[in-house]
Length: 128
Figure 1 (cartoon, rainbow, N blue to C red):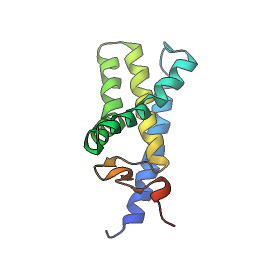
Figure 2 (cartoon, helix red, strand yellow):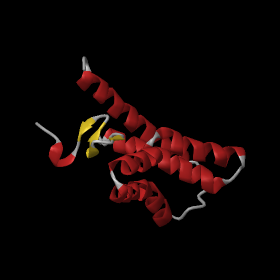
Figure 3 (cartoon, rainbow, N blue to C red):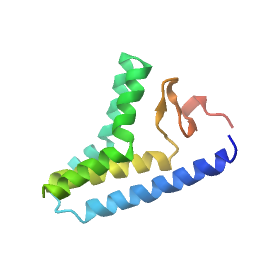
Figure 4 (cartoon, rainbow, N blue to C red):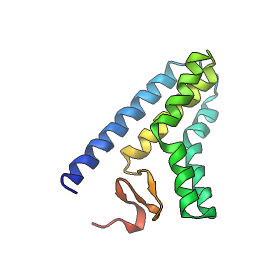
């Protein structure tokens, strides 16, 4: 793929920006969640890896469902439209989590396996 490394660098930078915006939105919220609950919500999407027990297709679908930016943005929008601060906070944290993962190079999964992402291989399958 031409320019692949440059594209990945931009996606990681975008992830850092999305993470920062999500944390900024969370910080400006009404603080319905306690700090420990906010930390749990931030890392909760990673529990979706459990779906890989049902196979690579189901695992990738479930993992990607909660790691796309739209998932957090939708929760954030629901919180804003319905004036429900808990949804706003959860949405901001989910958005921040997805950005955080992308910033670290953990992309959306393919059906080839958990370690194969749209940003390239992760973990022990990474080369170089």
